[in-house]
Amino acid sequence: MRISRIETFLAPPRWLFCRVETDEGIVGWGEPVVEGRAEPVRAAVDVLAGYLLGQDPLRIEDHWQVMTKGGFYRGGPVLSSAVAGLDQALWDIKGKAYGQPVHQLLGGPVRERVRAYAWVGGDEPAQIRETVTAQVEAGFTAVKMNGTGRMTPVATPAEIRECLRRAETAREVLGDERDFGLDFHGRVSPANARRILPLLAEYAPMFVEEPVLAEHMNALPDLVNASGVPIALGERLYTRREFLAPLESGVAILQPDVSHAGGISELRRIAALAEMYGAQIAPHCPLGPIALAACLQVAFTTPNFLIQEQSIGIHYNRGAELLDYVADPEPFRFDAGSLLRTERPGLGVDIDEAAVRAADKTGHAWRNPVWRHDDGSFAEW
Image (tube, rainbow, N blue to C red):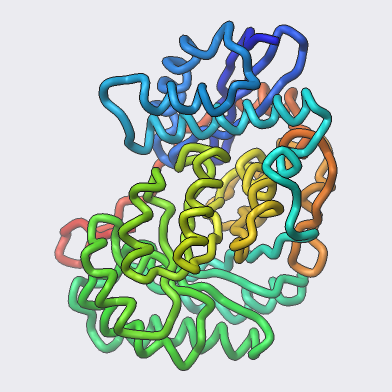
């Protein structure tokens, strides 16, 4: 069996899919994307396709090594995401070739269901009570929301109180039986994070995500020691080596993205590294159906998996939804806030190819917002 064709498709609202076809008719799907930078990732997939065409698709590890290390200049989110999507597609092909779900090829399942959380926005705090209540009524046992909008580098008491009110409102609605995550989204300076984290402890968030930007990793030991609130991060880290420093700093939860951090192959290695430090993984995935399907395959076979992000109904999705691109939504049917294990081969999702091809004719040019402070200077989004 040889790889005979590789195609990419821009799929609204902000995704990129790849289709890898073999000369025996087996097709694998992947999701190589950096949100807001889909076009350069598409170009990188085309470059890597020059190597993969004509190759045996079952030699996944060898291809991963060549794609990540075969160029003199390595790394970065664009290349890593291109590799990630192709890696997902190769695992999809391998599972279909052997008639097995990917989780069986990775060692077999360790759980029957994967707990997931729902997004409830949070940029504007006024609707938090209503949106959290809606997700509880939908059966979810956990939600996540943004902890703040724009925040000045040294926050005012009003800005800090607004963040705390979000947490207080969520806890009031959820009670003590359910969880919430608070995403700082890199909007909070190290100084502000040190002030806010201890104040959040009484609301017992499951985690605070990205309390500082990835370039401020030196601040992590102080933040871990400042509060008992678990710290989570990782969506802007792309290799297992980048996760070592956070683990050594005491970060409790890693959030690698299967479409950014080298695909299923590297996500498994990051999870194994985390296990050595007693840390959990909660993969980042505000993306499309292929990325979520890939995450689930890893989750079913990973002992130190905590909870899964997913994008159904997320506030980023305007004009298209995750389920618009699947022929059968059953693998994404929630049961009391969890997704159930299936034995469908490969990634376990049937992509509606006609819908994907039609979407690509429109395409997209999604870009994240650019925020500014009141004085006109740049603010983290």
